[in-house]
Amino acid sequence: MSLNPFTLLRTDSSSKARAGVLHTRRGDVETPVFMPVGTQATVKAVTPEELRSLGAKIILGNTYHLHVRPGEKVIAELGGLHRFMAWDRSILTDSGGFQVFSLSKLRRITEEGVHFQNHLDGTPTFIGPETSMQIQRDLGSDVVMAFDECPPFPCTYVEAAKSLELTTRWERRSREWWKTQPEEGRPLLFGIVQGSSFADLREKSARSLVEIGFDGYAVGGVSVGEPEPEMMKAVESSVPFLPEHAPRYAMGLGTPPQLVEMVARGIDMFDCVLPTRIARNGTAFTASGSVNLKNAPFTRDPLPIEEGCTCPACRDFSRAYLRHLIKAEEILGLRLVTLHNLHFYITLMGKIRNAILDGSFAEFRQKFVSGYRVWNPEEQKD
Image (cartoon, rainbow, N blue to C red):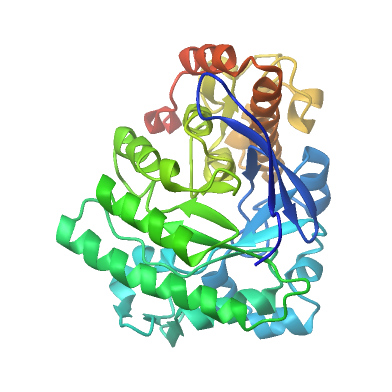
């Protein structure tokens, strides 16, 4: 396990919000941080150079998908994931455990791990704790996630408890595998708190992971279909039992107000597919809420997506032009809105961090959350 993977700089006096620095072998990452999702060794529609220009310091890769295609051995032969995708900054890879949840119809769970049918062609596939660690080592990840099972929502207490017991054994095996690897240049290893919506199971999971000992701790099993209050409860039930001087990561979250509220609850790291996913449908984030650029009122709108924004889309183009591109299904349209949304998320994290450091987070939180209109999927309709 690495020494001092996280430096805590300041904690907000009105909440549990923190500003810090995550130390990886490829450089420091200021927190709170948003990590763009690059499932298949690419953040959709965006080049690595564009990501760097947006200020991204760390992105995600997906262990399962890269294992299936093109295969971690191919990537390793070509110099590792960083060289493969021309990204010279930090990469966090998930463990493949989420596929235990998302590919539930194609799986069989045993004590050893998970037997899958490859979702591409049905080829039998196996991932267990040791397999997942080996894949992530071959990929060359800077932050590695322990192998876990993500239970569905809702599930019974008995189901959640049984799942947690298996997850804890798997995460202990993940940690034991990494202890056999050379310490020099070793990536950070994060454990994942599970326990579904049950506070006592969340506490039990967090305490078990701390006893095992990880470089950082994630809150998993959130954003899997549960109502927002349950999402917040999962974090509130986990964070108090995690070390203060270790990074905390909420997996797969969320909308801009949710990110602000999660920071207020003590979370340092986030990832989410929303910025790129809804951009492909013509929806853009702004400080006052999301806007569907397909809507008719933007036909002659000369303004940028958000006045004052310095992203490539807002700097050079109008809402009217972007609406035209999206309605015409031109690739440039979805690229520009994707760049805007990623810029919005990364910039939001910077604003939150600055507010924590200068003691104004309470005011920032109140103003941002109260002024944000929650994104409604129905707005995708013309």
